[in-house]
Length: 416
Image 1 (cartoon, rainbow, N blue to C red):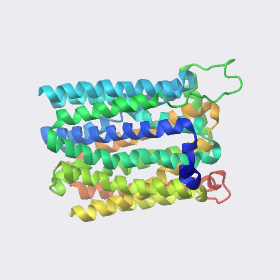
Image 2 (cartoon, rainbow, N blue to C red):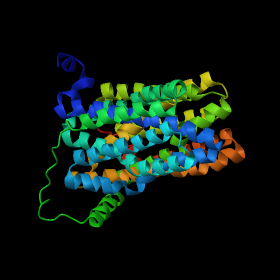
Image 3 (cartoon, rainbow, N blue to C red):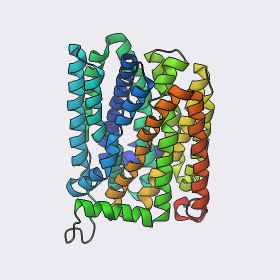
């Protein structure tokens, strides 16, 4: 505890629930990345199609359409309980994939089916994580806690990508998936220790809306609150225009642009994640001194600009350097975005609004589905340039249209 007292970035670990949640989230993210490398490479090699790879990547976000339901379920039965059920489902599905690979029955069809089931559940994991942080963390710890929480995905993307690629190359997909199952099992056990305190809302017992009514309330709140509406639009934009280039399409870049194997793909993923981790650590240390909305806008433009440069590179080393910088700016865009929503949202609607926020992630599968044919027809350079330029233009449009809510130094979302 003396180390926590000396390091402000570690202050959230004073909360017992967070000491369980952080390692549980870390292991979940680690397993996600291992699976992404294992299955993404399997799909690309077994089908030889970048379109199939894009479809597979989009299936991972199928559940964004029903993510508000997970938020509402958390409001009713507790966020930790929903997260436990989700992580038990990950373990079961990973065990099924392990059986397929170990028995030699793995083909694209069953892998796509299981990926679709996983895609219904997994996108809401980050929603439940954020809700638990907002629910259990004191307000003065919130920015630091979100920065530290973000390091779970960023650091796991480094370790998970490299370990997944290494295990597949050394042991094969079956034994690599045994390791994935072990990681999910430990994650599930740690999640049991997460706090279960729920926010108490006056009048909650007297008038509980139906699921459809709560969903309508969430959408109405988002639409009637300008700053929340602007953040949602920016979230959709970066998921559509930025993440596809540094997500599933990296397998295509590694194999067909750079001529690399699984280990090379792992290094590309780790480069982006390394930059994101560096950004998350800085946010956790100095987040109290930044203006969230301004930082979010500026870093969104810088992130998309890095993607534009990356689209034109043909050497792995330069690509890894630019990916590192892109990952750094990505953290300074996405963490303030989550903090803004947790700060300004009415606590009574926080679960539903954060669920609606996850609908913005649906921009990623849409972007992937469109990018697959574009890459095949025009090449990665043209596709990446088009996506990046569109992203930059519309980010500036959002900043200009809602300048009073997002850019004004006196706006509540820019208060330090």
